[in-house]
Length: 246
Image (tube, helix red, strand yellow):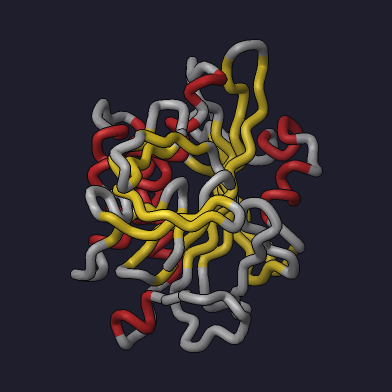
């Protein structure tokens, strides 16, 4: 998995930048046969998005805000969550090479250090028949931002953890290398589950106005979260059906 990197100064959303263009024509510009994928990185996003209605705060030129276009091979539509697993594990491994703090995945695809969010992503898959044709993966990674001014409850950056700036280009290259290695591995699902935020712990969750305590025990291959509540009842949730109370 080799990437052609396209750098742009500003856009509303790098995911939308890729989605709104003819991907085949974009990919044909100076892309060799070995460069099967694209990475579009922006110094600033005016409308960076997370999942659902979430927005992403990022100071100009301080963080990594980018999107990847990849072409998965033979991944069936009902295994789309495998892409989330691969990217999440690659992000964790990359960050673990910079910090000693424990890096975890808050289901389904937020990257946490302790109880604070350092990275989020938005994955959009396009299907062709029963398999995935291509995926656009938007990533926002807090790197050198020192203060966060939005009402996001728990952001953290590498600068806040390390006390010094990190070279963003080097960080991106390290992530892309990790992504290539993880995508070729066979135990990605195990690595993802091993890094789950709150796995094996009893904590508070919410569905609508109902709050309950439960232990996080697993994530199913299709991405459903599995909790066991205080009555011993096994409960499964799709994305956005349950909220972590932090």
